[in-house]
Length: 398
Image (tube, rainbow, N blue to C red; front, top):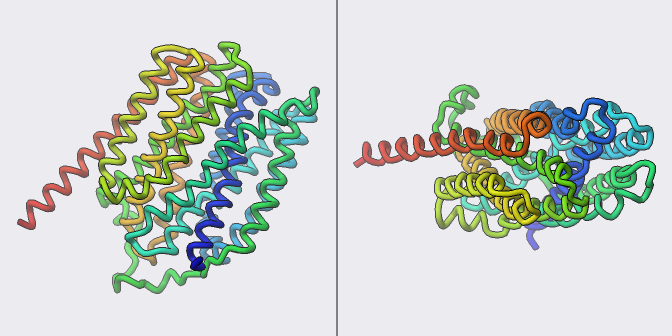
């Protein structure tokens, strides 16, 4: 196997480990928050803090990874993940909600680094193969879809007096495995001052952001992630409200995660065959279908179908947006462009997840779903604008 192929495979394993931790937090932290928080409207706060901390770390992470090299930067960051698992587990045993928030926040800080796995893979290949490299890394989430929710389900009652404490202790082991895996990854340090395909000087970030493709790439990934975070975060709370067992909740979230990552086996090929615009459009349509199903009923089947489609919608919008983003910058502009993208994406996701708990608690499941529609509409409008811009450019050359 070529070195770059092996490195992409190992990055996929690291992605799987990170997302196993994240999926465990997604399925369990709203329930832990509901049990520990005095104000039940704050049940989704831990997830929101996780996303906010990932957002805050996105910019420094980009430059730390640039300075240290991505391999050693990723390895250093696993210490944050280990600490987050240990602190969260201890907080549950102590019944301390705010300490639990701190622990989950540390996990979010690691995610600020780990979210660059997909870019690390993309930078190992040529332009033609970037979408497939990104997709292959995201395939790691398929493992996470099985491991995370099931790990939470199997371990959440090991200690009856402190549900989920062992689950979060397992996260410590997950990041130890991640550290070991990263030791075998070969990620050559790239000199961002050397431009391989252009002699152009680096542009200001404002100029990069004015490109229509950048706008659509950013909105697709950011609002697609926000829609997913809003509906998914509220789902365990909505199912608990309807008195479903945790096994039902973990089952639905597991299939949601499979929807998020299983399409990655073919998403890269679909992008090459159908084009980015059609994939992003399909993501919007699937998001609307998710909302429609959720508004039709609250049986386990309704939750299952809706969350499965929501996951596929996220996959198309996030991978499509990430791939389109790689077409908007040159090598010397990589760090700042990726940092701006990830700060925006995960800020939107964090705000949506925080809103989810409050909307679900105060207004109910229907309002949560209706709140997703304007964001999907914005993506659709922006995509239509890009299509018109591209048609005008083609006609202008004729």
